[in-house]
Structure formats: C-alpha cells, structure tokens
Image 1: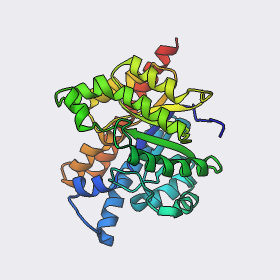
Image 2: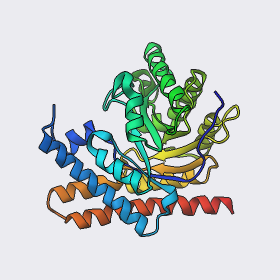
Image 3: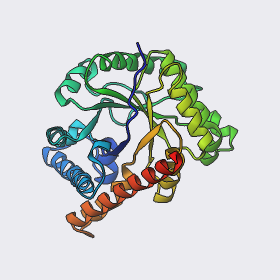
Length: 308
C-alpha cells in the first residue's frame, strides 16, 4: 500500500464520547431508554451549535471539523455533511481496553451509511504490553486500513499508550514521570509496529507531549519511509486549559503537527453547568464556542510564528 496522508490544518471539536458521557455526565448505567438517548443527543447538539457559532465568529470552515458518534449524533452527522462541514465518526466499541468494531464485520456498512470525511478509531496499544492483544488489535486495524484506502473516508488513528504496572514501577508509580520519561518512546514504537503490520492512518491523533523533541520523534515515525504527507494532531486528554495550551504551543511549532482535537476541555464544564441550571443553553453554547476559538487561536498563532 502506498503511504498517503492528510496534511492540511485540522481543528477538530470531538464529542464522540459514549460510555464515559453516559456514566460520568449523566450517571446512567446499562441500556438506555429512548428518552435517555434523546437527552444525551440534545446535550451533544449544544456542542454542535457551539461549533457552528465558532465558525460564524471566524474559525476557518475549511480547517474546522467535528468528531461525533452515530449512537447519539446521527442527526448531527447528517446535518454537518449537508452543510459542508468536515466530519469524523468513530468505528470502535466504546470503553473497551481491546479495540474491536462497534458494528463487527459490518463496519463497512456503517462507514458507507454515515459517509464521514474521517473514520476514527481509539486504540490502547502499549508495545511493551500483551503481545497477543497487540497482534489481535493490529489484525483488525489492518482490515479497516485496507478498507479505508479503497474508499472516500480517510483513516484517523487515536493512539493511547496506557502504562503497564512494571512501567509505572520504573518511575515509582508517578504517572507524570511516565508521561515525561517513557510515553513518547512507547508511542514511537507503537507507530512503527502498527505500520509494519500494514496499518496506515492518514492522521495520527496523539496524546499531548511536553517537549518539542518528543513531538519531532513522533512526527518522524509517522512520516517514515515515504509517508511525508501523513499528519499528526494533538488531543487534550481532558486536561485543564494551561496544560492544553502548553501541548498546543509545543506541537504547533513542529512541522507535521497540523492541528488538534480538544473535546472535554472545551465542552465538559459548560455542559455540566447547563444541566445543573447554573447557566442558560445559550450561555453554554457561547462558552464552548469561546474555548474552541481560543484553542484555534493558540495553535494558529504559534504555528505561524514558527514559520517566520
């Protein structure tokens, strides 16, 4: 397969959270009723309205996009497609440690039904972890990669590298030290192993990195061996504003990082306040829009300064 990619600016507002949204935002377990499903869908529409508000306020439409699930956002995906917005939709089952398809062997039918610009997967892959688990995941992901390279939807890969216990033991149980000292090398190793298995994303969605050097190492792996058009975007991990700003400014200065996907830091607190009747729906829309616009501004300002 000839490595190809996507290297245009890409500012994603992701709200494809399903299990975590249902449990942590709404406090619901198990199978949802139709009314509960509608309530979650209504909350996601607040986020979509905020996205559209940000476009009206000046965020470049050609650089902006949403990532939302079909379970609670099918109507939003249809509307966004009709209105010419860039869309992404997940293919993975929610909340699982092992990647598998939400629709099993019918994953292709979902992609054709939704017709997103990007098909996204979230994968937990630690190269020093369970080898059999990694092989099973890579085999499924190769199927998806091959499928997407034949169609219209591009492949977006969200790589998470959760620590193994023995890795945490190396840093005396300090997760911050794991992030700073070990995670970047494990991300590079994961990218290389997945590429060797025939998994070829157009865009890698990367957990935030504190140092320019680590960002450069990840880009070098993502773009190795003729993959020079492959892009990387930074995700927010639900961190606070100051941490996300650090990650955005660090990545924006590195060629190959083309944007970001920051979800919970953009929408979580405003949605919680709206649901608690502390603020109006309109105020929630405006606050989510403001936060998303700010992240665009932070990335673009640093990106432009680095090119001068």
